[in-house]
Image (cartoon, rainbow, N blue to C red):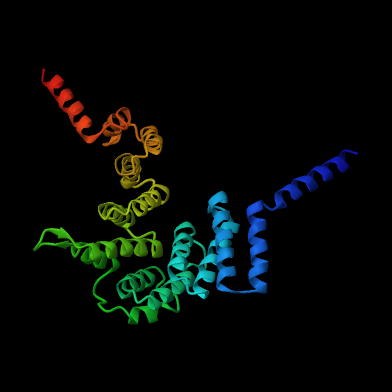
Amino acid sequence: MRISAIFFLLAFILACKGAQSPEEKAVDAQTEIYESNPTDSSAQALVQAISKYIEVHGTKDSTSARYILRSAQLSTKHQQWQQALGYYKIYLVEYPDRPDIPQRLVELIEIMDKLQKPELNQVLYRSFTERFKDNPKAAEFESKITNKEISTDSLLKQIGLSMFNDSIYRLNEEMARLYVDASEVAVMSNPNMTKAAEYLHRAAETARTLRNIPKAITIYDWIIEKYPNDKRGATSLFLKAFTFDNDLKDFVNAKKYYEEFLAKYPNNEFTESAKFLLENLGKSEEELKQILEQKSKENVQ
C-alpha cells in the first residue's frame, strides 16, 4: 500500500512538473499556425507569443533560451533585422557559455553585413577572432579586419574619442550612438574582455547624455547582473536609482532602487548621496540646493 502511494505521489509530481504554462501553450498554438501558414504576420504573432513567455518566465531556463533563439532566427528569416538583433543580443548576453555561441555570432555578423554596419562588424570580427581563435570562421573574419594592428579595446577607444567635436565643443551624436552600439556589440560577443564593465558603463552614460533613458537603464541592468563584483556594479545600481529619480520622475522605482543600493552597499562612495536623495525624493533641484546650502551653513556654525 505504501509503495502504491509513493508511486502515485511520484506520478503526480512528474505530471505537475510537465504541465505547460498558459504562455507555453500559446507559443505551441502559434507555432502550429505558423508552420501551416508561414507568413510575415503569423511569424510576428509567434514572436509576440514568445515575447509574452519571456516577460512572464524570464530568461533563466532552457525553454527561454530555445524560444529566444527561435525568435532571433524567425525574425531573420522574415527580414525583421532590428528585431532579430534584439533577440540575438538577449541570447548572447544571457547564455554566454553555451556551445553554440560561435554560430550565433556568425549569424549576428551576417545581419550586420545586410544592414551595412561596417564599423560594428569591425568590432565583431576582432571580438570573434580574439575569443574563438581556433574556430573555422576566425581566419575568414581576421582577413576582413581593416587594421590588424589595433585590438577591440583600441578600436573602442578610437570611437569614444571621436564622440567629441573639439572645434565646437559639442557631442557628435552620430558617433555617440555608434559608441554605445559598438560597446554593446563588443561585450556581448566577448563578455570576458578585461574592460567589459567599464565600456558598458561609459555606454550607459553616453545613452543618458543622448536622452535614451531606456537604453541607459538596460545597460545598467546588464552591468548589475553580469558584473556584480566590479566596482561599476554598485555605481550602476546607484545611477539606475538616480535615473528613475531625476530623469523619469518615477519616485516609486527610485525609492526601490535607492533602498536596494543602501542594503547592498552600506559603505560605498555614493552611500551618503543615496541616503540624502532617498530622504528628499520628489523635491525639485532648487529645493535640494536650498537644503544643501542650509546644511552647509549649519556645519560652518
